[in-house]
Image (cartoon, rainbow, N blue to C red):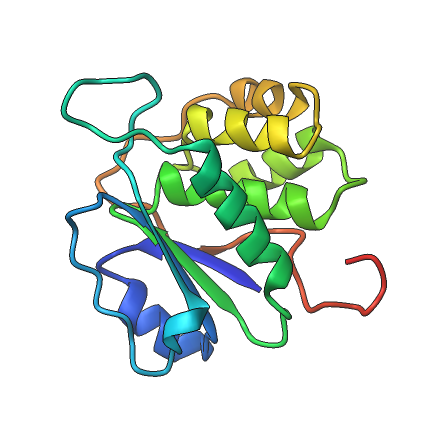
Length: 176
């Protein structure tokens, strides 16, 4: 399973679910204390601000970072959970979870994944820039971004609820 949460909830969730992998998609200058149960090589830290257009003084996610994210998801053996967080658990982390589901399910319809994301997290508002970069890298021809635009902005909140991303379970040994 892949779980999504805020930075504040990350330490407790990692312990609760027995996670072996951690992805932090958060501002570059934000201190993230990696729980001791997560080996350093199983923690991917991607420093970026939650923006979708270039803004002076802020760092937008890059193609390279999205490549790292996809490679990390594909290398994860899925024997134990992965926890994914950003600051609030609403935008960068939900975009990353959607990217994971699309990368690990190359034949699954993008709208199905997006609709199931919305059901799992009413507040999810995936960062469209990250989704667009992944859409290009995964060869989805704009369908990922279109699906996210169709589900629209999530419910207003200060912090998203913890949720498990649909369509990501244990590896089956086949074309996961």
